[in-house]
Length: 331
Image (cartoon, helix red, strand yellow):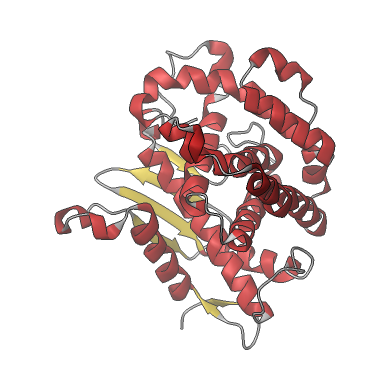
């Protein structure tokens, strides 16, 4: 009998969850229709391991191999089942409550898998042999001599931030003047997984950190969200592609700002008050985003929130990784 999660009438089989995430990987991350039959054999392999603990591990040998514990799925489902009524309820689509939990499970799980597989896409296996969601999971680090000694300890954290960026970019997709509700739902799902990783890792009671704080990850996430309407103009270096000011303001007030309050509300509902504290007040958070957007390190001393401050500490390491990662590098 397949192990299941949820209560009576709301069972989610692990087989279904695996099928969903594999389909997402093939259809959105690797653009299955655009690759040849020969290349399909090199698509990443996702294996579900029957283990109640919360962990995932990705390695790259002939192909990218991701192992995911059943505990990730059961704990993520419980997280959304327990807190789905407390966050973002005023604009939810009219679906059954258990379906909402499954939808958020699938979105957050999809982001997690995209994150782990991004380590391969970004060339991170030049620097380490294995990555995972548990802290201290960047194993056998090598090729870091080119990075200054004072930055070397930040490299694993920086690599995780890069993988976050890539996964977020894939899941959210390109900006559109439509579908803002779905964007907000996806950002909530990503934020929730970031919080869950921190909450579960806190149970390990081990020293040292190879993952950024949830608040730092959410700071980068909302920074990416705020910039989405401008990306096309930046890529093509064409200011005529920037949406009109009225649309930019509508996106900020209808998506970016509410996503901050969604994250605050969810962290408090989940008992992660420290994450809410690290995010800071809305005034400080969005002021920090504006400073970060300027790209002027001389201003980073003005950053007030914990997430923004850790982001700023990682920036020099991010720059130092460019020569190593080359064309694989992402900001």
